[in-house]
Image (cartoon, rainbow, N blue to C red; front, top):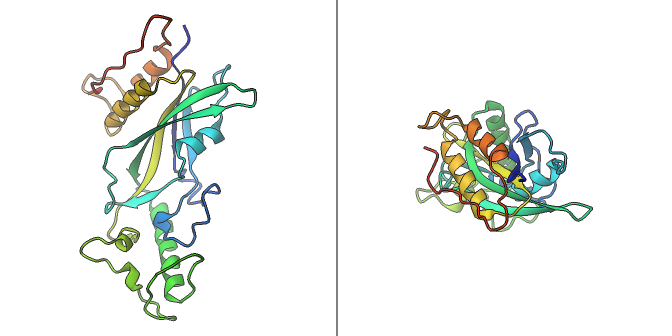
Length: 243
């Protein structure tokens, strides 16, 4: 029988590349750095290659993070349930494979990335304060055409206004970035893929689960020990977590 999963992958921020604008996103320099989309990368995939289904890194990166990399702070709902979606990759010869991605937010502990975000924030505020409004920026209040102080638009109100949510202060805020874990399959078993990824996500902070098994063991299991069912059989994925 054929394997259920061809690849397991992880997509997210490549710390060695820094912050690069997402070339597939619209021109978003008119919004604050926290609202912009940045370039992601497939950080790892296992196995290295499947002969009948070569790994398409650019397609997987594009579809696993369809909105690009997004940054948030603790003022956003970064701890809410992750978002699951599916996608289809169609090759030039017409063959298809199916992808499933679970997107969540991970805290950025790299000082260089945090400093880069702070620099982008300072440049954006300076541009607003000097009266050089970025393109397509509407209804933004500034304190004067030559003021270097923080625009009223960014004053942090007690009710956490929309403007406050888009402001990042490296001395006070925690920075988070979107990340994806996912699988590539030959058959669109959507619910089974969703349950597996959600359960794996719940175990991410742990080095091992209560059963004593490592996270790698579950990835190995789904890659090499779960097969596509024959006719008249069905695939059952338990809703219980790995814990």
